[in-house]
Structures are given as structure tokens and as C-alpha cells.
Length: 214
Image 1: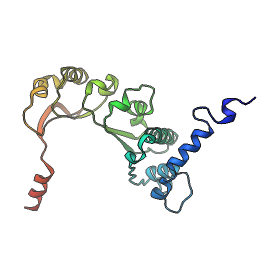
Image 2 (image 1 turned 90 degrees about the horizontal axis):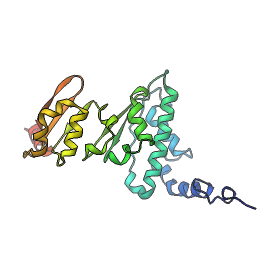
Image 3 (image 1 turned 90 degrees about the vertical axis):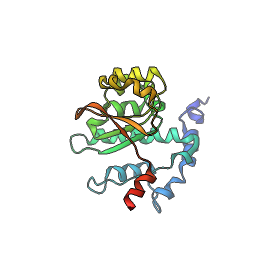
Image 4 (image 1 turned 60 degrees about the horizontal axis):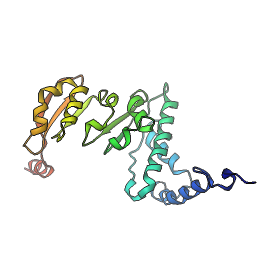
């Protein structure tokens, strides 16, 4: 009598791994032409400088092209990178930055790898830059430990309340965050070097380029 694992029908079994391998097989040619190595391992080696004495490379991945497989891929890769960063601790730091858009989709899960990176990553040389349209959706323990903020117009009073609770200096600009009429106006806070919120206006890229030309 066969069980599920013998047939390969179980989640995470041989059949699923085979299907995932087929989905990701094309990435080998893009990332490591002419190599038969595991492309996840190749990305890890390039990013962390495993074969170049710590001098890592910039690695750019086109995740949207993976469609529904993107979540599987990013979680597996992040697990691999975090585990290696922990192994390097005490020898050298991993020294790389994780950038998250729509961060609430990744940080709400307290059992997820990205939540762990946000909580513990600094110790192992992993930085995180994240963006979200709703600060209230970010766990308070992550928001309160975030040091640098660039905040634009907020449309929810709950978002403002959460921001004030996480960082008291935002209480002084709370009304402006809800009603700021100037396009591009932002409020910047760097802890601990700048203990107060500073307003600034972000210039459009084309205006910056024109000023450089002149």
C-alpha cells in the first residue's frame, strides 16, 4: 500500500519540487550563462561575495515575470540568504539590503522570514528598506524599531495614530500628514541623529536633470 509521500502527491513532495524546478529552470541562462549550478546558490554566492573575498555583486531579479511562482521563489531565496548570514556571524557580516514594496504583504506574518529579517537582520549585516501606503498594517514592533522615515500624505487617521505611537516626534506634524496640500511634500525623521521631523519637498526628476544641465 502506497502512502502520499511515496506517490509524490503530498505538498512539498517530489511532484511539486519537479514542477517548481521546471518553472525556474529558465533562470539559469539569465543569471549564470553556461553554468549548471543551482541558481539559488549562484545568487547567494554573487550577492554575498562567497568567491570574491566578501566583495558582493548587485543582483537584480525580475520577479513579476515569475507570476504566481514569485512568492515561492522569494521566500526560498530569503531563507537561504538569512541562514547563510547567520553562519557568517562572527567571521564577517553579510552586508546586503532587502527592499520591500507593499511591505504589509510581507511583514504581517510574524512567522515569516521577512518579519524575522526585520527583527534580527541588522545583527547579521542585513538591512531593510520598506515602503507601504498604510503604516497601521505594519506590526508595531517593526515600526517602532525602524530608524529612518520618509512620510508623505496619509489619508487615514488610524495610520497617523500608529505613526505617533511608534515615534513621538510625528505628533507635532500629525495634522499636516492628513491635510498636506503640496504635491511632493514629505516629512523626514532620522533616529537618533535627527530627533525631530523635518519637512522637505521632493523635486521631480526632470526638474533635477534640467538644473544639472544648466
